[in-house]
Length: 533
Image 1 (tube, rainbow, N blue to C red):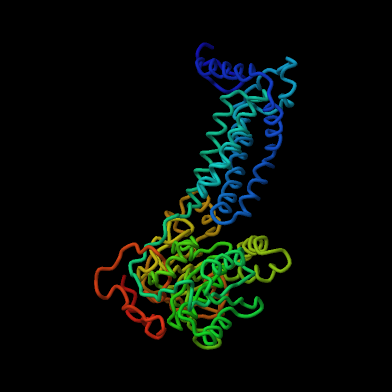
Image 2 (cartoon, rainbow, N blue to C red):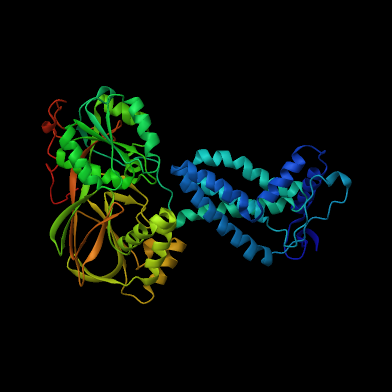
């Protein structure tokens, strides 16, 4: 058929590419026997059914942080690339495998020839998908995995089961699938949130005057706490009782020890509880993240322990805003603060199910099963949002401005803007749940009528019917029928080295605080308004 001869039964390959494909294949076959032959053969076998990438994901998960998120994105990318390659492209574009290598010199490297289409290479697609998915979240882990992925891809040519073109196209498919996951699952920003207000905090050389509150059951808290006490030898460490309420224990500890500042080492729930108590006590806080997700620490940019230690020693800090909600329920009115998020609807129900199942099957399996159970059985929640009647599946309120605005919120670009990030999922339309899932999967959530997002200085939500649960910072804390959300600007002082925009006005930075006078710290409620940015 001339230049556009059909190479096999279905893949049209221009003559020059076909010639190059064969030349590269023959060149690989002409290589002398070496110790790499059995290594590449076994490496290709290890990647069968993505077993190799599941093992790599397990290693990344143990590392935590960005590497753990990379492992999840990588495995999702592998699933997508494998489905596209094996389920669509191979049947649609069949191509014959390379001819069997019968020369004795190939015995050390050859593997059984698969019966499926040669085009494109599924091994190369999965390898590129996993490596790309990891590198999007954790460039350091991706750099380590890239040579392994490249070796797996090349092994398919070296062992004689694929043409080089199959591998190149397969790798391109895998990388594209991984890259496309950013459309429905945004990559978390590595830049800390903007904080416009510098705050005065006592300088504590060696941690002298600081009380370190530790939740030993959280993630890597024990390891981090040991590093903190080594770097700040004068700090006083106290471990929380895992069976007690962290907020009540923290309040009692501050009354007992009367510190000049508070350090907290644990997960988001522990951090939120200690920060709330510290605001009431008008004390600055040093956050040493030791949990699994560490949302607040990541957003604020205080994940580097050495930098936080330097900030404590030098007395450098910033003021950040908090969200606050007044709950009207069966027991009257209560006020709750939150550093990250608050939510009504399906999420609090999922949290309660997770807490119930967690002792038996572990946190993450319990969380996944709980969310599936809630999605399957949830009913729309009738509410009035700022007086307007709606039915919603879920209402989310974030402290600050979360990004991206048109996808699932991942991180905050601003931490003290004087506004709340409000998002909810309407439930009035037919098939709203299905339409929501389709929009999320296709990356069109921002344009879907099943998703609403805005910034607001305040929000009033009235539940029509029985009280519903409120979750703040991942913990279910109260039931109610009325919820008034607002912003408390610059409520919390947190040790951090860099200030994004050093204030030039005399009122932008608190007056210096004598370390012996904790009462001199500025009132956390001062300057609070109706939420003007």
